[in-house]
Amino acid sequence: MKRLLFILPIIAFAGLAAFLGFGLTQDPKELPSQLIDRPLPEFALPGIEDGGGPGFASASFKGEPRLLNIWASWCAACPQEHPVLTQIAREGFPVYGIAWKDKPQDSREWLARYGNPYAAVAADQQGRTAIDLGVTGVPETFIVDKKGRVRFKQIGPISPEVWEGQIKPLMQQLRAEA
Image 1 (tube, rainbow, N blue to C red):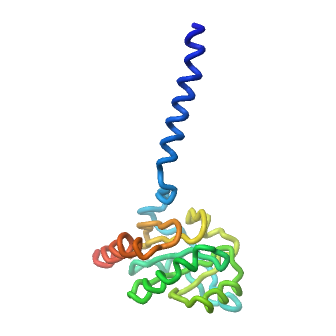
Image 2 (cartoon, helix red, strand yellow; image 1 turned 60 degrees about the vertical axis):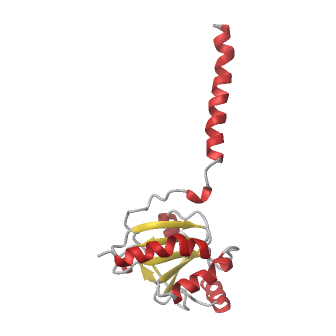
Image 3 (cartoon, rainbow, N blue to C red; image 1 turned 120 degrees about the vertical axis):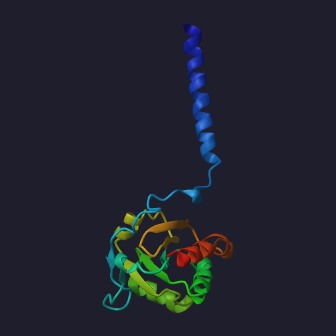
């Protein structure tokens, strides 16, 4: 019995070390989204124009596949991603932006400086919509299909390689679907 009491903590430690060691081998960008193959959560957000202007709502994400990019003027990685978003928009894929926890004035100034690739930009100053989307940081991008269902989530900036290798083929496939 004393031998069992001595061995039990060693077994428990080995099991815990194996569990934690396995977790360290996982890519943190591969976090699964609970929204994949589910409808985009309902929201209606004001725009970033003076006075709020027209923004957009989740209901507008039907009819054609779209990218929904969550960004902010204070985001360190967003300037890296921005040229890729501009390229995506130039290639004819609609990109919609949500300025997360950002002052509309700061968002407008940021877009004036870097350019505006967005078909529309909405303000989520309180962060409620981002919570519903499961956003953990910026930038994050969602691919929404013709039926308004989330099909893909990119955590972190979209690189040219991710665009060409993953997102663009998915967008083309979603466009071709009946």
